[in-house]
Amino acid sequence: MYNSKLRKRDAKALQEYLDTALISHPLFMYYCPDKSKRSKYIDAFLGYHLPKWAKTGSVIIGPNKRSAAALIAKEDFEFFFIGARSLPLLLIASGTRERLHRKVTKNIVGVLVPSGMPVKVLTIFGDSLKDKDDIMVLVKQAAQQAKEENFVLVYETFSRRLIPDMEKLGFETGYQRNFMDTRFIQTLMTFNI
Image (cartoon, rainbow, N blue to C red):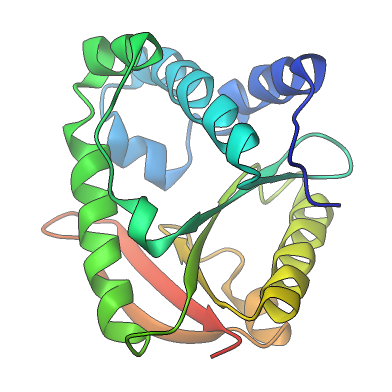
């Protein structure tokens, strides 16, 4: 099921669960290195992005409502914070790391995928230890959508936990390196190329 509308009740429950589930996720460790502020940052991140993604139909919610997948077109991946909902993000962690991450990722995707091909970047938000089945349902839905709408799906992650499962579904690793000068390993995998 592709969610063009995310019900407020479901969004709130998902956000509350992810606030704690993502506290040790490598992407959020990079976005907000200060662990004492990270939970607030995750809450502000989801409060800013979930409504935007729901409005544009760019989010898929897992069947158990404990995970989400964002499918963002390459041209929309780099962005600037706009609006009142962005203020908490900027106050907690300035948003500089998120913008840098997204700019670098957009550039790598530009190298991985031949120009002229439509591309969407898949980012998974969930606890891959507790909710792996829920997450894999999301990945299968995103892959099906890529086939139906004829676009290249690029899975981007700072965690290696799901890589073997993604390979079983037909994703191929196109890039894997330390992100900038950090200890985080960024992996980009392509599907439907």
